[in-house]
Image (cartoon, rainbow, N blue to C red):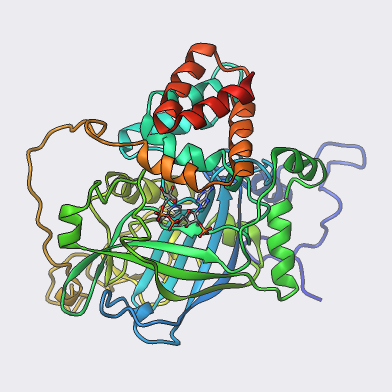
Length: 475
Ligand code: NDP
């Protein structure tokens, strides 16, 4: 039997009775192990994520089934059959850590690929677009998804007030209030990188790329009424479903695809190809198969692996890069900043976040630093003459042409935010349209009429049928 110890390894003689002055007397301060237990209990939580707080995750692998080396020299795509370990964290966006799973919300789909050349994080969602395209709007938008600052209750007014003034959100809200806005569980959703990223091949040619993960389990969704029943019985419905499926060796799988756009095509593309509120048509940019993502191992410890896992779009590897997408640049700053605050300076040295390859950095010291972070012995600057780690120009990206004046550009000018929601609306069956109308009407309960009218005016610009359908469901 293992012996119980303090955190310093001192073997504990009694873990049932505190040390007291006399049988009925007060406890003594010198009962250090009591103090250690209480102090640790006070520190059992780290700040929860401001968004995507309720998460569930699993380990697995990406297996390459098709050759895409003409587009990217990334190590993980290097040959058919290549396997790369992954960790995928799903989440809801708005709910706090204790929120129920079966809520209408976007689902986070964040993947960490542990490649031989460092970690690549694709921090996506189950939707191909997002509500906004400018990071200035990000904190404001998130406030509307959270609680009324006065009552601390979830509120619809803030959401619709914001959306009705930002037509760029129409595409994402049409998805959110469609049947796909309330998935039955996490195995039956698609995942999308959403942003445009770049691929760079061996010839140092750049391509723009979007990532798609199509569920092999098929899409499955719930109505609001079905979800209410699920939440009444089980607040962890999605987490339980994924955990039990993996436990029963019913491993969920997704087909990984990319859409590729050349730099020349980007110059003549009808929309800004870096606008996060727009998709690229499958017809013009067909899906190209890459591989199969499989989840096959549950975490051993929720806190260590899921809560402390930290993803960031700034984690890119040779052959995969960022793009001029404004939201992507903001996230590349904002996510590591959140992790340094939430988990700590050395969050990337924790086992779940640590890359497979050696980390060699001249960053120094900081809270919770330990020898495993391979600080260079005896030299903490670069360049140095002591054989310390050096840059490798093979990992430089090719130059990217940019032009234009520094300014604050109004993205809404001459920008058609109605065409793509219309295309989506026109794809829907009659019963999907009915669900869309009634889901929107349900979410608008309690919202002042002038805000509803503003939103209805936006729906009219998508299609009269859309606006009339919502009006009908509201009456
Ligand atoms: P396609 O007909 O080739 O593709 C339609 C896509 O819509 C499919 O990927 C389908 O996913 C998806 N879809 C169907 N219903 C919903 C829904 N309620 N919410 C979200 N996605 C849904 O069309 P286009 O490429 O020409 O695009 C037309 C519209 O389809 C777009 O304006 C966009 O709204 C939507 N869409 C397009 C995507 C793209 O990357 N081009 C990706 C996702 C949506 P599935 O195949 O899994 O059924």
